[in-house]
Length: 212
Image (tube, rainbow, N blue to C red; front, top):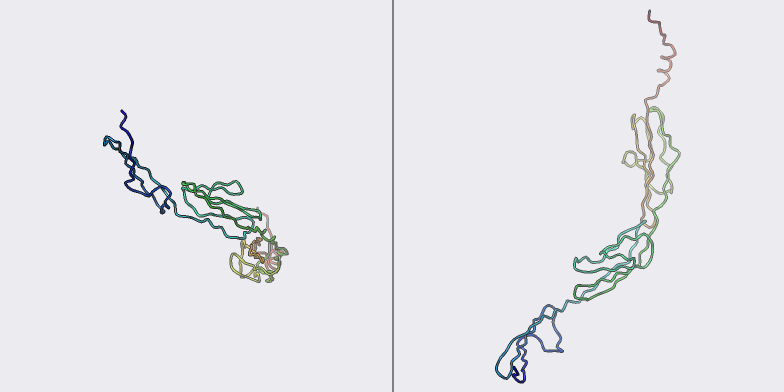
């Protein structure tokens, strides 16, 4: 039926055009007609706290992972096309990420990434097989110069077959360049219990008799 004009009264919340605080505010309105009939209507206004996404310029060796702040409810869009909170980068350049919240708030951050190649490391001049009585020798076959040598994981500048003993021994040369990038080269030396002069003389003088 026609009940005439309707009066609208706000019961709670903030008036239209007001600055709403962060959080969720419930606005409730009451509608009353000329006959005294009334009803209410409500809706929520959600204001998110402002947020800022930050990335830092960085450098990697060969490749690395660039990460934005993680929130399972946020959406991510990287300049690489990635949509996770992190991306793996293997080339130098400027990388950008835009993060969007469920409320539609977004922020964009960028970082300059430098990717340095790990140094090429070699070592040479060492034997593969050596006798246990052979003299010690310097571990100076690693390049580039300025690295460190290791025997079976222990720092060393000399390899001594007698001290090492028979068996397999792992010679490693490690080098770190000016960019902080690291690499290594490995070599295996086998130390044998070779026959000495006395053993060879004994074999030369040995006689073998037929078995009747």
